[in-house]
Image 1 (cartoon, rainbow, N blue to C red):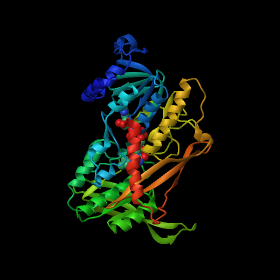
Image 2: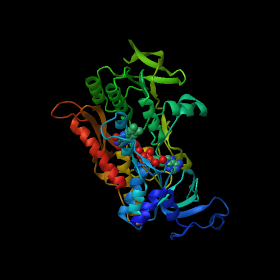
Image 3: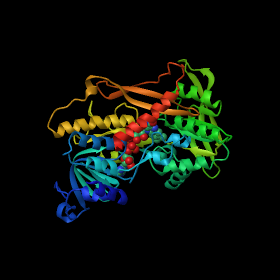
Image 4: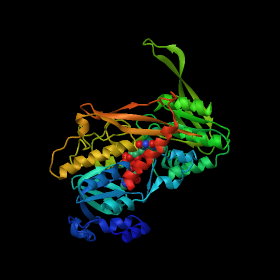
Amino acid sequence: MNRRDALKVGAVGVAAVAATSLTGCGGASAKPAAPAAACHGGGPKVLGKHTVVVIGAGFGGLTVANNLKRIDSNFDVCVIEKNDTFMSCPVSNTYLGRLEGMNLGTFIHDYAQPVEKYGYAFLHAEVKAIDRAKKEVHTTKGIVQYDILVMSPGIDYNYEGQFGWDAKKIAHIKRTAPAALIPGSEHVVLDRLMTNLEDGDVIITVPAGKYRCPPAPFERASMIAAYMKKEDLGGKVIILNETNKIAKGAAFKESWKEIFGDKVEHHDFCKIVDVDPAKKTIKYIQKVPTGEKDKDGEPIMKEVHHERPYGMLNLIPHNKANPVVAMSGVETTKDGFGKVLMNGCSFRTKTDENIYAVGDVIGHGLPPSGQSANWAGKQCALEIAHRLHGKPYTLEVEKTPVSAGNVCYSMVGDNPEEAIMVTHDFSYNGTTIVGKGNVPKDAATGKFRSTSTAKALHDWYRGIMGDLFA
Ligand SMILES: Cc1cc2nc3c(=O)[nH]c(=O)nc-3n(C[C@H](O)[C@H](O)[C@H](O)COP(=O)(O)OP(=O)(O)OC[C@H]3O[C@@H](n4cnc5c(N)ncnc54)[C@H](O)[C@@H]3O)c2cc1C
């Protein structure tokens, strides 16, 4: 594709790339897809067949596609993505904090860039079903056949399982108290709610179980507190945590106390029961110690019922694997999330040797972060590339631990900008790949937060966006 063609693609959207890139049934030519009846017995239209089909052009999926083409430009790769633009969750909280230079444009990227650079097919469509027996992915635009399938579809919310609400109430809650863990309009709604906030507390709920980016709600609390301070808004940021776990906990608590005084409050063991968006109230049951201990020396807890008003609510429900995983029928963990069971030290699924998974849905013990998805995507591309070249391959991490495979920064203050960080070393424990975290302090100040970590956060973001898009 020359530069002029690329500009045309930019003007008409990535769907046009798909239309010209998807091959006909079973062929390697770039001809338009053959008529449905000719290749699929009159069923939905078969758009084409590709050696590797990747579902999801987020952190994990784009990394796999880009790296397969970096390794061998002759690989026939197709990416299927339901959104027409990429929006980053990482660093989006700094937009809520109104940090200098952060605007919506910082987080939105154009899929035509990597498509043009690497030359893979890109289908802008939503995956609706997967037929493993026929090796087909059924989408809103037709069927794509594969030899190897990679799933990186990210997460979904489990409002039904957690609250038993009907579809109407869930839709209303999503509009009025969005979780904003999934890229797209939720972030825009959350920002609007914050901009319109005049009074009252901001409540952020933190779910139990596996959820996307464990430090994200706490970074968000810091950034909203920074905004409220700047705008001289009364009210507090109240975190209602279903457990007593806080990712980078000591570092966040130190920063909140020293930067915001009592403006950020964290409450343990708060089980959300209901929300009334009309009255703007949230009901929850908190477990608090009675002061007595049981026969094993454990504190005895009692339940206290609360109903609190809010000015703005960021209701983060339980997370679960994106429905694409269930569509594939591969085996998953039996917890509420449903992580994909993996084939030992590999990104191949345990169930199907032709299906791989990366990103937040994997069953390895890696933190669910964009950086982990990027690392996993590169490993997965290496595994698939060796397989396609007919060569054996063992992931490096099976033999040698990977130092700082994940580095995750959280902005905690804006004047000056200060951030904290966690690094995770990855290793293989004989069953899964696991991450061991470390939250360092700044050697000079003895504090967890520093201005140099804030600078590193911006550098990291530029670097990973460069890896995905430049
Ligand atoms: C507020 C916030 C802050 C964060 N900060 C950081 C950070 O600082 N550092 C960090 O490393 N990570 C951070 N993360 C985590 C990071 O965003 C995720 O871990 C990462 O996006 C996971 O990558 P993924 O590929 O699994 O999913 P995603 O990046 O979400 O990609 C999934 C893609 O699949 C597509 N898709 C889903 N279903 C379908 C379908 N049926 N058909 C077609 N396409 C589909 C989606 O549209 C999406 O584009 C943060 C997350 C949040 C919410």
